[in-house]
Image (cartoon, rainbow, N blue to C red):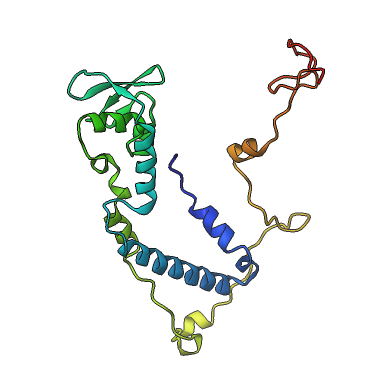
Length: 217
């Protein structure tokens, strides 16, 4: 798990059709969408009675299961060597770090940290980021988004009505507007098909640089 901010991606996907509307209608569609998200997530959060949210409870359980085969060697009070498939990792509970770097990156007990917590009979929830707590999620959705009255009942100042809003000055680029978002380098590389050697069939090289025995099957 790597923490990312995909708010823009979520809004782009949910407002794909609404982006064809005028600015005022687009903003209204976004307001309705966020109001619905806010209401739904607040109801889900209020029905949770654990310290962590559903998502991070599942991650904790998965990491706990993965730590069962690991061994912890005695060391100092805060530094603990963990053996994972023959490899050594150093966990520091006080700093919430591990030599694999996942403990600090994810801000949640990774399997190496879980192995230490199990050996000391400590609660994993106490070593998570506070933002994974259900209490903080409830605070995030606790601010209501109020509905707007009908436009015919609005009181608009005269100076605002008299303003004429013109489109921005700029040169129109050739072709139609781009409606597809630009993908990150990591996304492009993840979906790129891997090339394989035409001589041995293995990946990572081609026929010209192949040093393997040819595959005649």
